[in-house]
Length: 488
Image (cartoon, rainbow, N blue to C red; front, side, top):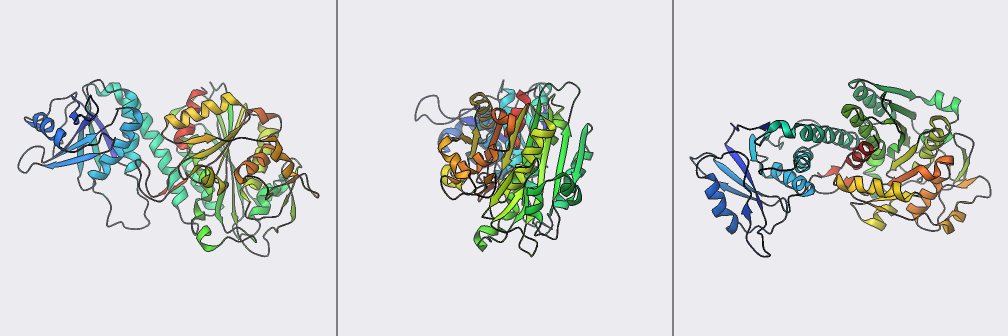
């Protein structure tokens, strides 16, 4: 991960970046922002002369490069920070690491009195925008290894940098887990990665249920979905329980390590990226690890039901009746609607055995998420207005996006089954809404304290975009950490 250093006396000046902002009046040219540390002779004057003619449009993340042969710095980067808020600085940080990818180090002189929130956003942008996932040698890897942030009082900003560094590290972990090919990433491997990461943080407790324990305890949904694979399913239970915790939250994440669709097999174009179908589990696990690293005073129990949905003689069939943890049964006529089956088990277990104050699940659940909200926005469901408002605010502040969707009563009738308690995948109505309504049936007495996010669309990005890089986005880690910090 890129090395970030706060310094009041910058000593690596081959490449220097200076912030610029839009002009004070509409249409006015960009202008440099006064910085907190002294610059080499002539640099400030040169930046002042360059900014008005560099054709900045005023958007955060615009970069203008100026070569200065034989002088210090040898390369000057003007970095537009837009309106200067946290989100703008996050975009600017990501743009800077891309513009300087062929440098070894960059020194960015920060403005006088820059807010800590802006520094947090900047560091997140630097660390997330520089993320790359490759197997084997990467001949095209950036050479940039470090960024110095020049400020007059480094100690003031150390907490913001540490917070951003932890958030980015956990987001990158979620991206790594999601990007890993499913030839490597089966349920056992995923559980082992969680165990390895948890072992590095004191105070975490881990339990992994294997198929024998799942069968003995009645986790019928997880067993059904994982029954077609040679790699058996798992249920990971990760608990962070600090002594000063006042609230207990259970996080549940869908962990389908590969999804063929089962007997209701997907076409190849829809199957090729199904290594990302465990992005919800990756996000909730990474957020829990982040909470432990930050020592947040909130109890978090994370459940990650892990399974491969494969085609074989052991695969569950359309029309099967599945008995979930706690006894509710589901008729499933589409084996490609498997995620809700494993989540149902985990939700029922959480309600009956863990009895938390709040219950939240995160899942790459439906393609309908993208149809309704596009590629960057998760669909949030809750019967509690305040819970929904608080979580949406945290997600927005973290630089992610979600939109609250309805839970209409007139759709509930579609969940009826002639053979079982519930029909898991009715074809009537809106797909993402029906999936949420189905999951709500397993929340019992926590129905009014439950939140669900369908994040299939924003879990993946087809191109570099601000702090997002092509591939897995780690969506949810940043928003969850912000939200969990408000519960302490």
